[in-house]
Image (cartoon, rainbow, N blue to C red; front, side, top):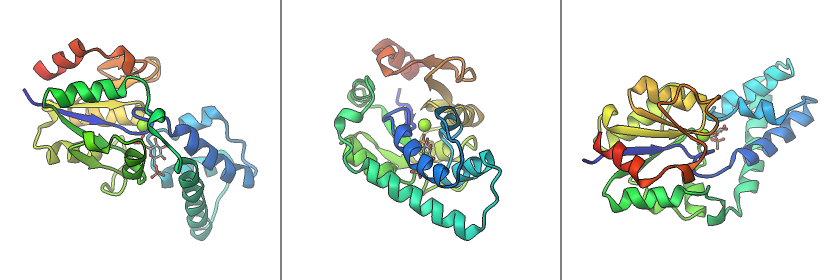
Length: 217
Ligand code: G16
Ligand code: MG
């Protein structure tokens, strides 16, 4: 059988969350907002605009649209600075092995990310060629947990929801996959991703038998 394997980017393929954090922290400190690593968890899988709203909420700050736009531009400029020198060694452990297995088996591979910077990141870490389809923050209007990003990816691959498998590290992303009726595979802590159908701490825990089972069922 041929299935659609859909991968989230941030937290699944690469750990760009640390760069998002640094860029947001700069904005937060300018505004006198205490922005911790725990707060950063709230931003996983969440769009840029929504992330700013969450941060402003932490500081009980109301701002004009003009200021918000200015901070959004600044955040992305800083973020782009952090990711400029990303290389293959920033791909999370086990990811390449899984991509290679799926490719060798003729499976379809898509990216389903909230990020507007997804494509250049895949290019920098040199794995763009694995992906048959890329759907990112530039293509969708509704953010996760809305399933739009995954539904679009499956459609472009010519597969139904039940023929699609999603790998996600965020709660919103797992919910999106479940709402779409796709198989959801959580990458990260089981306590946090308890709504996922399957759960692994990282890709090194995913073996060929498991992937073959996903293909066959
Ligand atoms: C990623 C991150 C989010 C980030 C979002 C938008 O989503 O998890 O923290 O806010 O993209 O990114 P950008 O500002 O680059 O458009 P995902 O879906 O890849 O995990
Ligand atoms: Mg993610």
